[in-house]
Length: 302
Figure 1 (tube, helix red, strand yellow):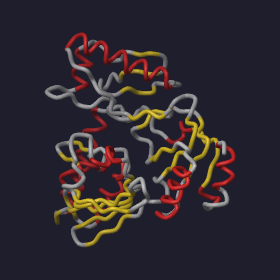
Figure 2 (tube, one colour; figure 1 turned 90 degrees about the horizontal axis):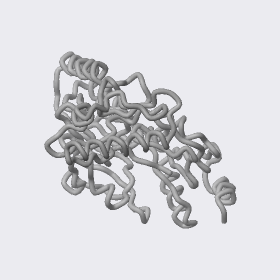
Figure 3 (cartoon, one colour; figure 1 turned 30 degrees about the vertical axis):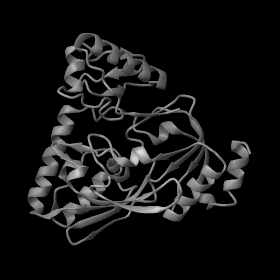
């Protein structure tokens, strides 16, 4: 069956209020770039999520799992297939003793705030990271000397066959912006985070300090996907780009931030092609000047 027939088929298998057609992906990413997706699903339960993936696999329909789109660049033509967004509905957070247990769609900022409410310390570093817990586990997100590897106890994932597995911190094989989840095509369902008792005022003050540092150094007022490149070993991507004379360099609406050279921003009406061209230009210039190949951190969907 073609994608339109598949869409009608889904209406008979899933709750109709979780199915959307021809949604513009620019409305679902922090880059504010991207054309329409054929079908957008917003599962309201783990069971519906598993069923959505099962149906896509059975009918060989391409699908992509979306959090809140904070690390994603979508093609101007959009995506031919299904995008399954877990951010809106699968976002419950609860606290049990010194543990925070949250579903994959929970925003990191909300998880950090919940930890603060219970005077738990150790998750302050994640407060300003603009993403979901699921995405943070997948890429072992980190900032300000903290990373998910330091606090994760375990993670529940869905494997490609539809089985739910619980993986320990060690089994997740967390490294710099990587994990076994990527290699095995697992989907994060929930995670358990282990923290320590702390002083609520001190935790709040530290979170406030980190957010102030972010606002001072990062272009938070412009659409972007955060740091565009991974940190090359022995270097800092932003410094290499700045030292290459590319600060403020622009192709169409895509621009190297003049506040932090590690960020490619949408300076107004930027297209997918312009961002990709700018990323390629930066890679070529930095490699020529410093013999370092910058690897993009942003994910591309097309």
